[in-house]
Image 1 (tube, rainbow, N blue to C red):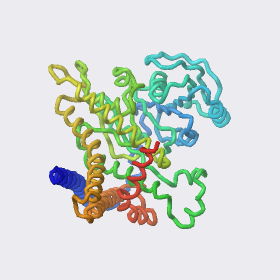
Image 2: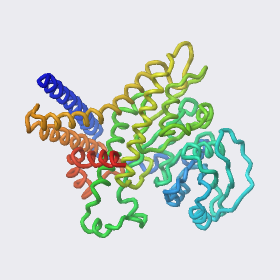
Image 3: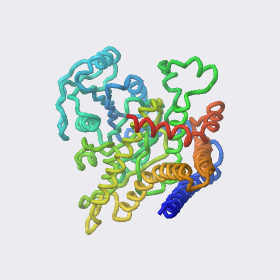
Image 4: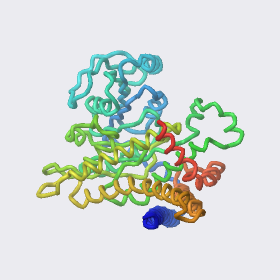
Length: 454
């Protein structure tokens, strides 16, 4: 019995290790090829969006910011109101009971209660008060009963006046042309584009520029070394951008990035009943439904771009673990829903037919299975070494290959990112390249440990 068990463990460890390493090698090779094909750094022309920004035919947009109790939203509001876009509004949705935040917003933006009537098209928790800004009439703040992020988004969609709504997390800051970049696919084809996703990069120095950096700010400024966890989050977001650049924009279906901003066609959101309050990730859930659900006589598509909308500060390791767990729960929910999705039959879907649903199912499974395969490979090989079923050096060789694979993928992502504006350079680039190979051996186990002891 023991020889059979030993052979099974050794074989399973070998297969999962080879699958994981093979996946990393393929991704790295694709990234290198893509970077070389696109050449060196190419800055976008300064006047690329001026015609769109000046046109009176540009589609107006409602920007919805669900302000959670733990987030500071003032910087986000400031950057959104400074956008170079012909016509838009900013709708901030807060929850009752957070009087400190509301008082700060009132003082900073000159909020005054208003009698505003609107059509409540989605079922949401009760709205208690509505404020408009004396400082900038484009800003509206809604106060409502606490009911979660999805309910806040639905309140914003009900209140929104314009055809497209953009959901923005309360910690994101952006440059003036961010909305023009995001809306470009929709502006080119508003009849077909149901949603457009863009990418948000985690930036460990964002809090420093806002004057709210962590306690070791002076040491960071002196040495140029940020916390390792911050750099690993930045590398993860750059790899997510690389996936958009190399693959997702070429497909007619897929998943949104882990951190991003999405523009939605409001009538599509309404048709699907808004954001689900029961979903682990309401925005990912709605994107999956837009791409796979069946509706008679309607067509449309979802576009995942590789455009950078803005930056967000890095999270604590507990926050990063919580976000990763929520993403995995959302993917599991999506996979279950896709299995229940009927065939295309004689209907036309918003997005496509059975082939598109099959593709989405595959990419969901891949994102779920690759981390599991890597964890299983590491666990089996270590257990086999302790039991004497595999060579004592096998765990070290396995970890070395997986760490090297992560390092190559991250370096390839940095190479590809280097051809676009805002890429890491100088000391930041050197630090990220040095730390990249240690992610699998240091940061990933830390995330797993935090989730286990939570």
